[in-house]
Amino acid sequence: MRSVLALLLMLLLPACAAAVSHPAGPDIQPPQAMTDHLVMADGARLPLKTWPAQGETRAVVLALHGMNDYSQFFAEPAAHLAGHGILSYAYDQRGFGQGPHPRFWSSTGTMVADARAVTDLLASRHPGLPFYVFGESMGGAVTMLAATDPPAGMDGIILAAPAVWGRAAMPWWQRLSLWLAYNLAPGWSPSGQGLDIRPSDNIDMLRKLGADPLVIKRTRMDAVKGVVDLMDQAGAAPAAIGVPTLFLYGAHDEIIPSAPTWQAAGAIPSRRAAFYPDGWHMLVRDLQAKVVLDDMAVWMLDQDSPLPSGADTLAPIKPEVCSCKR
Image 1 (cartoon, rainbow, N blue to C red):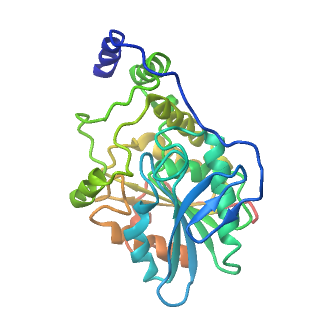
Image 2 (cartoon, rainbow, N blue to C red):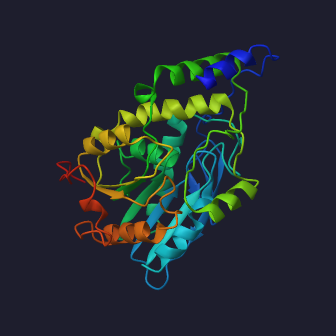
């Protein structure tokens, strides 16, 4: 209700700018992968980071960041996975980091098309190696939608607290607050301070994010509306996911509620779900991140192996075997 009151008070302020988005333009070339960036079909340039494996490369993972974050989020997780022989990639999605139009939403369709195109480009560099897509939060929602029509190179996906908290799972006052804010002041950019929400127990990491100029601190309401639209679609997508899935969630997640999370996980045809009693929202950057990353590595190298942590025995849903053929 405090959000509703704040929005009503906002009516006394001067009107903000109109809603703005930057979806992909028309195709003008084939997508390309360079050393430090990707070029999409419409010419958009997406910064790309690469972290090689230590020794022989045994698997490859493409990591998609969450809301207001960017590719650097995977630097420390990639360093740990490298010790397992896993090569990691991550790119700045449109509207984030040094991608096109920072702070402005593109569109769900654009982000999903980019993820599919990047998967195709990077998987083709590594024929014969298993290729996975990892998505954290918003990146998890994008990954889910990309996997409903999976590119040929996608051998599986890993979802860490994917953003599936759409309108159907929100109380009425949150839906009303979003509707009012988007329609009355789409350019309004609150900081989120004072909400008393912790995304991780890794305070040092959170402080570094706060000091990083490429991490967005104030989110436009039209971008909030965009990510809620994405969550709506992701929440309806699990049953259509066509690749094996490792689904990760922490007991202390204060960002994505547990009810829509486990509902989504239970609808995925082929999944291994893992529940971490000490985990928060940023599972691969929490203080117990190595536990999660070791589970991820084992699953990527052998999907039938039990997870070292035993977190898959704690999840409230059972594994399922996929009937789809890849």
